[in-house]
Length: 466
Image (cartoon, rainbow, N blue to C red; front, top):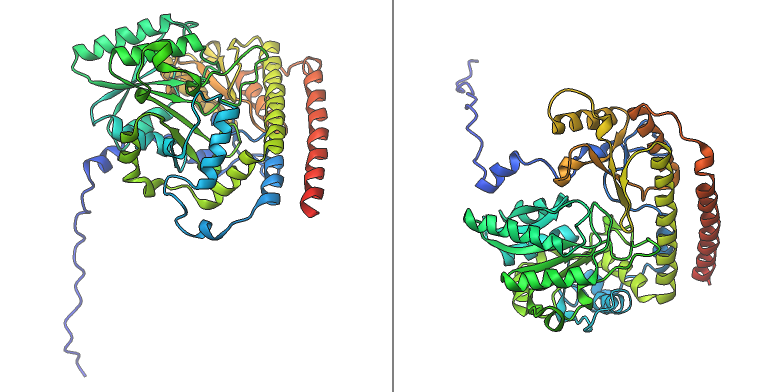
């Protein structure tokens, strides 16, 4: 029997649908963090994996946090709904009020109406930028700078981060504002409208805290030029220097001290760094005198709502004053030990660095190790690739709009992993292994800290069981 069915023809594929202009620009934009950094990480069972000493993750107290969060985990009816507010729960608002009053020394009590919580500080900065600036506008940031600002302000909002060349060593001085003035005038001359400036306090990547005097000067600058002032304070409680002091923008009286309207001031904070919880994704905006900002952001707040489980975990710790004090004390002690270990390593090898007093990293000068050939950025890239080949990653200076050849070295890594990372760095740079005696005291201190935390964890376990 002969079939009368017609032969099946395969139609030619049509052209793929066109992306938006935003989508097309994203195709050529380098990612903020390379996905390869997370695909094959070093671990106790993967000794050939990548040791990431370039991304700021604080893993020094993970076992304490894991034990604590297991002991307090409890969700209620509201945690399975949209909750009491799209911008944060009543529980989180109470916890943050306690935190900002006791740890940030907020001059005015932080009320729920002052707070917008979102899924990480990047999301919060993105939402804030969307209501402060228009596409093509600029926001001033001192160099070197955290590269995430460019992504938070520019990816979806089309707002440009305008780097300010502050003289080295003058970042925490009134003279820095002279550089801001020059940059602002240059922007005006070329028709670039500036809508805000950012203070990263404590500073990323330089690891210093701004003085009250310099913060007041930033307020005066914002008022003079009709700008918003955004203070990124995500490392506020990681100030480990013995003579350093963190001053929050929330502790100022901007009108009395600087003649600045408080409606210009916006503070960003989160759980990622001080609490070693990048994965919880909780960021917070505190704006105490600009209700329009809140109403504008609330219109799309559902798009970045904090997970109720994450909200509950962080709130539990923030409202538990004894445990909070224990954790913060332990975290600072371990940060000091990790920083001392780093200084011993750098000093033993005569590697120049910028002394730090806060944060999770130190700014180090590897310019003399750059291979020959090409310009400075290409030579820096060649050294970075050499590190990568040895299973090591550090933050490149050019990524921070800093001097090529300087690198950001993250030291808030669990000590046994960190030791392997330092050994790999020695191999990359062709250095002989440092004298063990130079760091023996630091290691003994680490061992003492570990004994103390084990005892604390055991006490928590017993308390939870009873």
